[in-house]
Length: 383
Image (cartoon, rainbow, N blue to C red; front, side):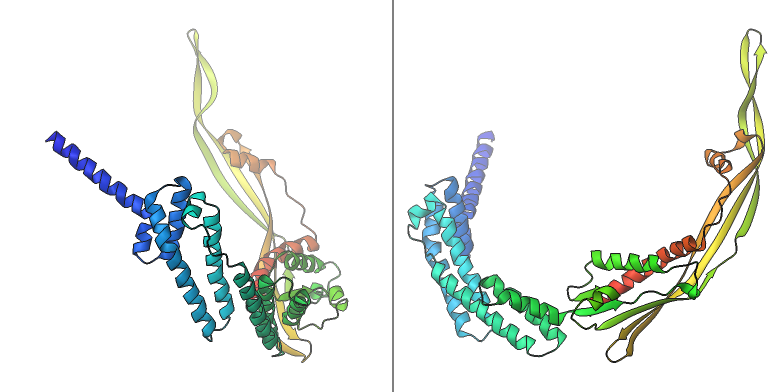
């Protein structure tokens, strides 16, 4: 019985080995009609073993069929009316070229296919045709005279350069299409809230400008400060206008909370019992007074998107929020040993002086900024 089991195991291993060998040699892919993959698998196997018979056979049979199927696909594509058909033709020739490179780099494969087809001339011609068809499409798109057409032309000009980097004036064409497709937005200076002399909105203005200059919101949207807008030859398409309304800084509000605190089993001393000192444990008590001072800042940032040419309002959004500055400290009456570590830290603190109005406004601006930037990104990302 043991001998039979061993024989069965050997047979299974032989069948499995043969199956795996056929798969890795490319024979399985060939039988399934996937001649391209069959060639690649056979070449890979011949790199490891130049005399692998199954791989040689698979390569010998699959390579002519792989080339034939790709050439038929090329011919059918060229005869069709598909948009950007030469792009597709290039991809087919790239596959033929990849087979050529793989065989050339495998001595075992070169024994089987000593003269693989090198499509260098055909590929160059196809790339030239692909570049020309994208160039013509770009010219047609930009002739529409609108921003979306210019953006499409920009993408087509990039494809033109991808297929032929030396195409006439292509870099200038790309720049021109990018310029024509770009939406330009000037951010007006934010006026001081309530015409205040104590509070300047410059903090939020600069923070916003830093954000838009360090974050790519949209490939075809460019933001300008007033100075930058004056120094560019291009007209502005949008003006972003912001102002604070109903800004309020409250008086300092004081709050007080008193707690009775106790802690059991606190060693308060020792007592001598005979020759031995023993600890004395008692419950200790304290009264903790927590004091808090708060100043609330609230207001609305009104945002308008304007068309400077038509002098029309395009969009309006109000951002309402508030921020609270606070100072907290504590006073302990009684045994401090009853306090937790956090309570001990609290009683070490002192009342902080109230911040200047500008500092309160900057804290409030931080909250508004967290609302404003996601809106700004979403709004202009969809234009």
